[in-house]
Length: 274
Image (tube, rainbow, N blue to C red; front, top):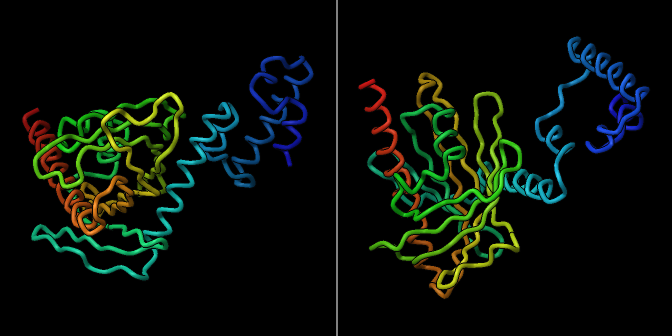
């Protein structure tokens, strides 16, 4: 109720706030003190970061923010559902990949692995420093952040590498990526999006991914290590046989974790020298 009254008195959007009269500014200060008092007594929850962001975002930014949040939530529903999963591969290092067929006959893959890094470290590498991924993952030619929406949502353009053994071939991806942290867990979600200023590149097939997600949480007895759960959900487009695609995608997951482990080992070695 207080928030509703506050918006009526002070204006809903940021431009209105800048043009407030003296009376409105007094009202804002009074309501601000009252809200702070209620929050300190636990009678009013703190606003979420997403809600705070939306108050100052343009319509286009709100679209990407909502799309990123929706992609993460939908992906979590898929990966946390216990029905229909079948063992695809079990690696010697303990990594396990399961598969499941969704409505529409699309096959998705869930990788589970343990990594020698905390969720915060992996969050930094996989999200905040995503443009550096080509330095340690040879399947990526480049990733460019085209737009930031707050701290936890971004629009990226990714181009895959042309390399021997790549069964799918080169693709480009235009995606919205979103991250969220809840208690000790980190959630990374994403899905294909649109941007009129960036149509598919000549000579490339634009694949569509998502909804997809990565869940990172610390091991119970080793907070410096993480359990990674990765839902890979991708339509590679083109004219490839589905049997070939279903063979290539879990292989791509296994290769990704292999390169990520090398990246972490190199980082740990550098930290030990320091």
